[in-house]
Image (cartoon, rainbow, N blue to C red):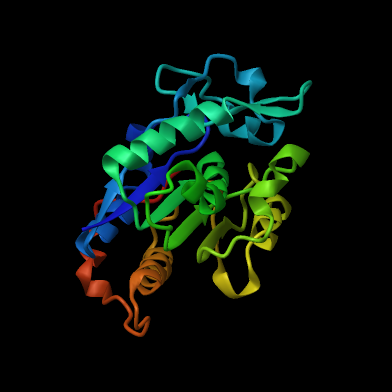
Length: 239
C-alpha cells in the first residue's frame, strides 16, 4: 500500500487533522493509499508567539492540550524556533513508519511539506524521493537562512490548493511557494472556501485524480468517482 504523510497545521495535532481531513483520507484509502498523521514535537502554550499571519488561525479557540506546531516564529531573532527539532523528529518518523510515496500538508504543515520536497533526501538518504506533495493553504519561508531549501526550485510534483476567501494565509503568500516550484511540476487549484481542507465532490475529484496520476507511470487513467463518493454524505466540509 502507498503510504501518505499528512502534516497538520499550526495549533493542531495529528489526531485533529485526521478528523478535519476525513473525507480526503477515506477517499485515498479506497484508492489504495494509507494515511499517517504524526503530531508535531513542539507543544504550544503562548498564542502571541505565533506567526502574525497565522494568528487568525487560533483566534477564538486559544491554546489547549492538543495544540502543537512544527515551529514557532521568533520575530526578534527572525528564526523558526524548533525547525531543527522537527526535521530530526520527522527523519525518525520516516525511518520507522515509511517510506512515503507522497505528503499532504495544511497551512504550516504545507509549508513544511514544501521544505521536505527538497530536504527529505538529506534527512533520510535511504528513503525514496517523494512522488507528490498536496499543499493546502501553503506558504514559503521568507527568512534568508531558509532559501537554500528552495534553490534550485522544487521539482517534486506539487498540487497547491488555495481557498478563494482564505483570510489566514493570503493568496500572495501561497504564491511565493508556488513560484518556488518548477513550472512543469506545479498545479494550482482554487476552491470557493476559506482556510480548511475542502471536502466537496469537486475538490476531492481534482485532488484524488491528481494524486493517482502522480504515482501512476502511464498517468492516463482518471479515478472513478463512484469509488469513493459514498463517503460524502456523512462527512461535511470544515476547518
